[in-house]
Length: 172
Image (tube, rainbow, N blue to C red; front, side, top):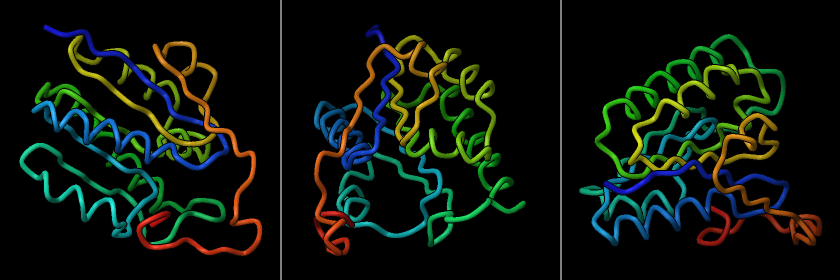
């Protein structure tokens, strides 16, 4: 049985989810089963269209609205996040996937949609063979401490600052 680790992709730069999806593609290419649970996302992005081609190996569930939370989360946001986290915990415990990506979980923690202590408990009690990736800005130091791999995406320069909007096939 292979050893599964905990990876974190965090930071202010672009590419956290993209890196996680790249690993999902690699795992699927090796015949591994992948689950992707996305907090705060409810829109149909181009990468999700592409992943549907691998529906026998990659399962994606989104737990969010069509728009990102820009102000204080409301009661419905909190309920949605709790339901999402319980779903993801059940996926982890079921031990049916080799790789589990919990996208934007760090943001969900920062927005107080879910509790850090619950996340720590859930990911440290994972089956030994399951690899878990946590994405999102502002990874809590407690998550960084228990992770086996942490990558920080750092923005040096971004064309969004010049008013360039998200482009299909590149950012969305």
